[in-house]
Amino acid sequence: MNNRKPAIGLLRLIRRYTEQNLIDKKWVEQYCKSEYWCCLRRKMQERGQYHPDNMMPDGTIDKRL
Image 1: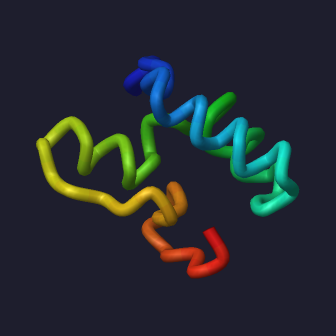
Image 2: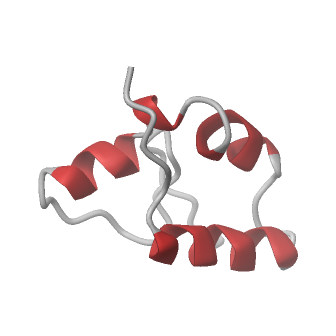
């Protein structure tokens, strides 16, 4: 299991979205605090692949963001 934490830029983005009530706090609880190792955004970032800011940890795109 990979215990690495989210990158600072991603944390700022998540904080902004949660403070603006644009995303549910479940994303923070599920991916940032417990299952970050399965975050698709993290995997893509580590491979140097592009991922849009509005891509959720499970790979879905939230067009509201």
